[in-house]
Length: 472
Image (cartoon, rainbow, N blue to C red; front, top):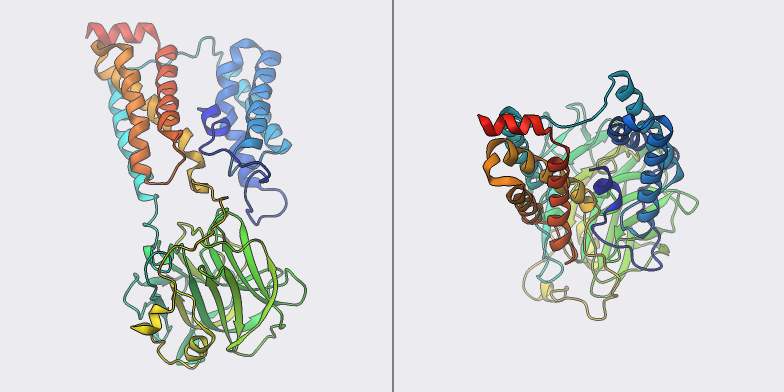
């Protein structure tokens, strides 16, 4: 299980691409460190009968092998700190094993455990299904775009943020006190990092082609880093419109993930001040491969970072207003009003219309000028999978373990061979349930990993318990 979670890739890293992805995190990650400690505690527990020296040496070799292999794996960030955490976890697990005087860690599989395994299989597949994310939005890529969502924040009370376009579910405010006067009617007022509006994952947010985000903002204070006005950026995927000090004085920033899974960013050139209303816009034209920002209706392009490709990669995070998606950092402090999300690249004239509150003409000849076909000459650097998929090998091996445990305990006459085949079938089922794009080699990899999980049960079960089941 541990090796499946740490040393088996869902996709290999392309030559020249740095390992891992931009997590936008700095310093020591305590959550990640703790997970690495806990993940290796079972390793130390199982190896404890070998003695402290051999147990720690084997655990260190396993961790070093996994971290080294991650240098060639997409979405992985190998570090020496992870090895230290793994060894620490193995030491703790070994200490528990020696305290409990573990001599031969066999698994006693009985009918009760088999029924529990069946329930856990269903629960695990359900979780994978529910977290697979909404389908990718074809509008703005291979179909004409439209106004995908619009929030006026004119409600006078309550925690509901109503979408005026009628295309996405309404969102929720984290506090009922986030109401106040806006640029046009009411507005979203954010006074601390715990206040923001959140909208559940929807196809309207999972853009792959052209897009435009517009909003009115009135900053009241600036955080030490980005102030995310509209964000879907998480796990190295998605987009965000913010104010930022990345390139000196605080300006607009428009961040997206390109076809290569890397950030493409357009910064503004005009410094943003506190206490005044600004109309801001970020425009991504997938057909022309351009990225622009607008301040008060005027194009305000500054530095461009990264390669602008003919498609983008969105996340499964839904959409957040007033903070980085699924992150406690990068809060926007102040007022936000009239947020609109389009699945097309608005022209300068249309940006001016949006700023004045006029409806942008998205019918007939006006729409025909926007992208409705794949962009020619696309760069061939796009990874197939998503960063969310990196844990699928671990899920596959757990499914294999559970299927084998259920089969051996509930149908012992079938024998180990059929249990292993059932485990491999669970790996294939996982590919369907996950609904995520993966390289072709996963059609073989997932069944093999799941079968390995089943084999671990067959090799680790207590023969006496198995005989008792057969006699029953």
